Image 1 (cartoon, rainbow, N blue to C red):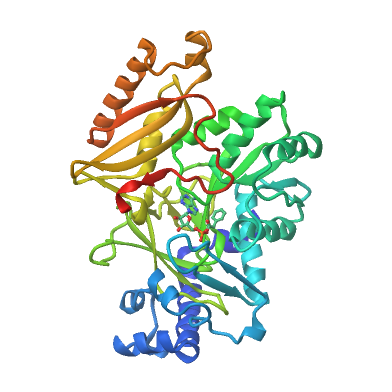
Image 2: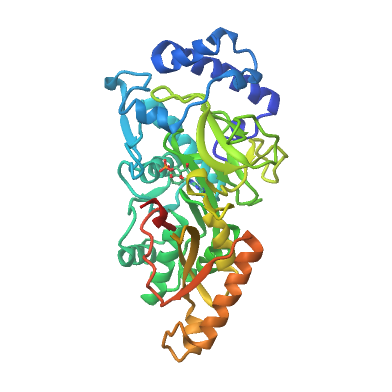
Amino acid sequence: MFQPELETMARQELEKLQVGRLRWTVERVYNLVPFYRRKLEKVGVKPDTIHSLKELRRLPFTYKKDLRDHYPFGLFAVEQEELARIHASSGTRGKPTVVGYTPKDIRHWAEVCARAIVIAGGRAGDVFHNAYGYGLFTGGLGLHYGAERLGATVVPVSGGNRSRQAVLIRDFRPRGIAGTPSFILSLGEKMKEEGFNPRDTHVEYGILGAEPWTEEMRQTLEEQWGIDALDIYGLSEVIGPGVAMECREAKEGLHIAEDHFLAEVVDPKTGDPLPDGEFGELVFTSLTKEAFPVLRYRTGDIASLCREPCRCGRTHTRMSRIKGRLDDMLIIRGVNVFPSEMEAAVLGVEEVAPYYQLLVDRERGVDRLTLEVEVSDGLLRSMEGRFDPEHEKCKQVCKRLQQLLKESLGVTSNVALKAPQSIPRSEGKALRVIDQRKG
Ligand code: DLL
């Protein structure tokens, strides 16, 4: 473990630490961020009234909209001169959300990322191939600082340019690789095309996240690369990658760095806290952040919590894999569907490849969902190498997939088989859904 004294803390001791840090955070935002002061005054909470974690429920929620409304620096608790760095979301759905870090915040972030790499099986001295995007996105620099803090040798390759990455992986012999699951999948495909099998590389573990993925995708990636493929979670509003990491020993949920972040799961409609094990919206409160503290930030991500002891010996609460984002949930003729649920079905069918996209549109006022998925090499070979969607074999596969989707999701959808390489390959976060209903 990277910080065993923190990662295996007894619950009582950990809670004591959390309460003290929660009070510190509330005091900080109360005194330094007018937005939070107004909200806290409204619910009658003063920093010195925080004596236990039960008080958490009295604190007001913070939403993405609040960040946008205070664009760019309105929720910062430090002057600009004290900031070491700024990151921002791409802002594809409106104004970007901007977050800031003091030098101390960067140190803490590096620590939780170093921890995450060790949780995945990394160690000092590893060559670490970092294929998360560098720049305003937190993935690249977050894991970069974490890997350096650990004492690994970082290859800061960023996303894209798969041919070049393939050569670097062959020649630099990384033990660890980091990137979005969709990008690492397409990188593995490229390597094969260029004549080296990803299984023959030195890569042993993958730190994969920043987008929803499934157990089935884990199997596919582990098979493709011969690695342990592990899930890392985080979001810029809370810090970036490193909020939670899945351990190699159990592969059953992601350990939340609870000495830095308090997690809750709430009912997305009412905001009421839900019991452990139930799926709802993840909510985070930062405990040590100086520049950009957050109180009860509503992530929009759907997951559940588990406080059972873990095989790896860490005591920090685990969160489940993210089922999806509330924003990405499709409502098809009244049925809620997460794109990841489609992925599970697609990866279970060997005649199709793991490259897919979902199209949603409306036909005569009724929602229509179409799964576009590439045929596998095997299916293509069985059609003498010529792709023909009208071929009897294609029709049968379509029918089977349709049936599977109907059984597992409860919605009737169309399935369109596509030629190999026709679905765009991901360079970072995959674009899975094209919703034409929104005009
Ligand atoms: O994606 C931070 C990150 C970088 C995490 C590298 C992991 C690895 P944002 O760009 O702010 O930050 O996007 C955050 O991405 O609210 C989730 O919806 C989604 N997300 C992140 N990790 C996972 C994951 C980074 N492991 C948003 N599984 C979050 C599913 C994830 N979704």
